[in-house]
Length: 83
Image (cartoon, rainbow, N blue to C red; front, side, top):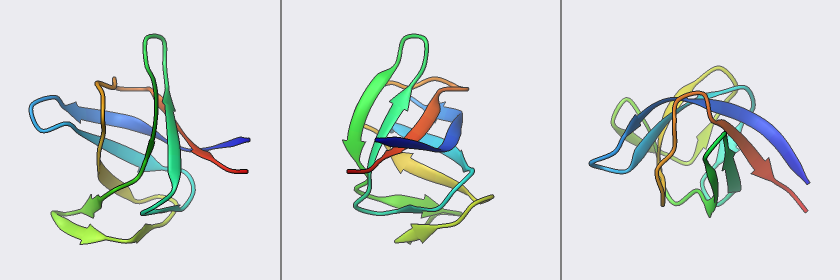
Protein backbone atom coordinates (compact mmCIF):
# COMPACT_ATOMS: atom_id res chain seq x y z
CA UNK A 1 0.00 0.00 0.00
CA UNK A 2 1.20 3.54 -0.71
CA UNK A 3 0.40 6.90 0.83
CA UNK A 4 1.44 10.20 -0.77
CA UNK A 5 3.86 12.09 1.47
CA UNK A 6 5.10 14.84 -0.84
CA UNK A 7 6.29 16.03 -4.22
CA UNK A 8 9.62 16.85 -5.86
CA UNK A 9 10.32 20.59 -6.14
CA UNK A 10 13.91 20.39 -7.42
CA UNK A 11 16.49 17.80 -8.50
CA UNK A 12 20.27 18.22 -8.36
CA UNK A 13 21.47 15.73 -10.95
CA UNK A 14 25.22 16.00 -10.24
CA UNK A 15 24.86 15.05 -6.57
CA UNK A 16 21.73 12.88 -6.93
CA UNK A 17 19.62 14.83 -4.45
CA UNK A 18 15.90 15.53 -4.72
CA UNK A 19 14.20 18.35 -2.81
CA UNK A 20 10.85 17.18 -1.45
CA UNK A 21 8.03 19.31 -0.06
CA UNK A 22 6.29 17.06 2.46
CA UNK A 23 2.54 16.68 2.89
CA UNK A 24 3.07 14.05 5.64
CA UNK A 25 5.87 12.87 7.95
CA UNK A 26 8.84 10.85 6.70
CA UNK A 27 11.53 8.91 8.57
CA UNK A 28 15.00 7.71 7.65
CA UNK A 29 14.52 3.99 6.96
CA UNK A 30 11.10 4.41 5.31
CA UNK A 31 10.65 2.91 1.85
CA UNK A 32 9.48 5.46 -0.73
CA UNK A 33 8.19 5.24 -4.28
CA UNK A 34 8.74 8.27 -6.54
CA UNK A 35 6.35 8.29 -9.46
CA UNK A 36 5.86 10.52 -12.50
CA UNK A 37 5.37 10.45 -16.28
CA UNK A 38 8.79 8.89 -16.85
CA UNK A 39 9.83 8.20 -13.24
CA UNK A 40 9.40 4.96 -11.28
CA UNK A 41 11.89 4.74 -8.40
CA UNK A 42 11.45 2.66 -5.25
CA UNK A 43 14.10 2.92 -2.53
CA UNK A 44 14.78 3.23 1.17
CA UNK A 45 15.41 6.68 2.67
CA UNK A 46 19.10 6.38 3.60
CA UNK A 47 19.71 10.00 4.52
CA UNK A 48 17.63 13.13 4.80
CA UNK A 49 18.75 16.72 5.26
CA UNK A 50 17.11 20.00 6.13
CA UNK A 51 19.18 23.19 5.75
CA UNK A 52 22.35 21.07 5.32
CA UNK A 53 21.83 19.23 8.65
CA UNK A 54 21.19 15.49 8.80
CA UNK A 55 17.81 14.67 10.32
CA UNK A 56 16.06 11.39 11.20
CA UNK A 57 12.46 12.60 10.91
CA UNK A 58 10.67 15.32 8.93
CA UNK A 59 7.14 16.59 9.45
CA UNK A 60 4.32 17.75 7.18
CA UNK A 61 5.10 21.14 5.62
CA UNK A 62 8.88 20.81 5.82
CA UNK A 63 11.17 20.80 2.78
CA UNK A 64 13.94 18.21 2.84
CA UNK A 65 16.73 16.91 0.62
CA UNK A 66 16.86 13.17 -0.12
CA UNK A 67 19.61 11.24 -1.84
CA UNK A 68 17.96 9.32 -4.69
CA UNK A 69 19.21 6.30 -6.64
CA UNK A 70 17.95 7.47 -10.01
CA UNK A 71 16.93 10.62 -11.87
CA UNK A 72 13.65 12.20 -10.77
CA UNK A 73 11.77 15.23 -12.04
CA UNK A 74 10.03 18.29 -10.65
CA UNK A 75 6.35 17.53 -9.85
CA UNK A 76 7.00 13.79 -9.43
CA UNK A 77 4.99 12.47 -6.48
CA UNK A 78 6.58 10.81 -3.44
CA UNK A 79 4.74 7.96 -1.74
CA UNK A 80 5.57 6.10 1.47
CA UNK A 81 5.29 2.32 0.95
CA UNK A 82 3.53 0.56 3.85
CA UNK A 83 2.73 -3.11 4.42
